[in-house]
Image (tube, rainbow, N blue to C red; front, side, top):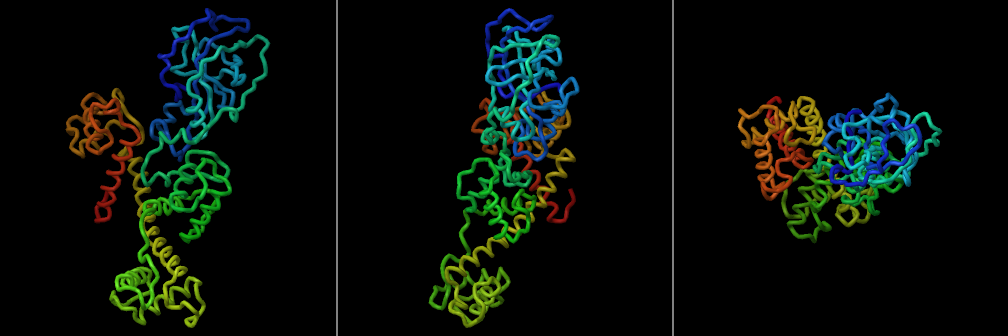
Length: 452
């Protein structure tokens, strides 16, 4: 593993007093000051990545599958400076007894006398949340080199908190984010938290989102799927359910099509709204007039029978939109609109994946000094928006590209001024807006018959 995601990042700002003891050449157990951070192993389809994508975080973490000595990652593995032989045990107070199996470019003996350690914090979102929550910790620990009597390894990931809320700073904020997630029953993750928020915002989940996909979340998802006529499992968020939920979330503040009961005494505008709505649902075929006629009454009756509200034309309430029928009409109207939007989101998600594979949209964060194909993609996107000359598409992220990024960020309202400390850095929000614009542009071209 070459480099690691470091939860604290600012190692050079930490000043510790050296103890005058190093690992080099040690044959006995000794005490040492450590600056400790944590790293994780990315998985596909996370809600959040530090560098914006699975591929980028995998590269940053050196694949995150094995340590430098070939040992598969496991709880209790740490990366240490090269002066620590593989197999060295370290007793970290309040954390556990860990074993050195890994290295890292930033894992060095610091000039302050302290030594760096990086603890493996787990896989996927839970591992990332755990690494972020761990932060930077300074401890005095007992080191047991290989060859001396060593204590047994003793470390449990469960003892390190992994709050899902810590991930949200790295979540891409757009209407497509749910389509990239697949939280399942029993897990605690940022993906589960985003699912719960969407269910709460659309009125299906009554409890406060916790990030744990438990029975209440399952019931809320099942209720949503029933309303949307989806037959997916409620124990995992499927792609199709995610598309419907994202589509409904976009319409969460929209009012119903009618708004009040409908009968012969209703005002003309209400009757006309009922006719338009029932025509949209396939039950009314007459003119949109303001009179309550037999065609409308028949349409209402047919809707009621098809939705199990009444069994015959002679029942009380037949042909009248009362509270129960109004609720059913609103739900059917919303379901049809959501289904249409969901299909569009699914098409756009597939397009987004194709564009990412073709390197036509961004998949990772970027900053000054970066170079390569990802920078070329960024520069082409900026050139297509007149923020950068096509002659400056070089594959190197220099000051001119930084200026163009800052200009775009201000134009899109991401930042108020080009003098902001973050101006010119391509983070999740900038990636989201650039990609969203590009996907929509190409989607509209496809709708008009053009090819990509």
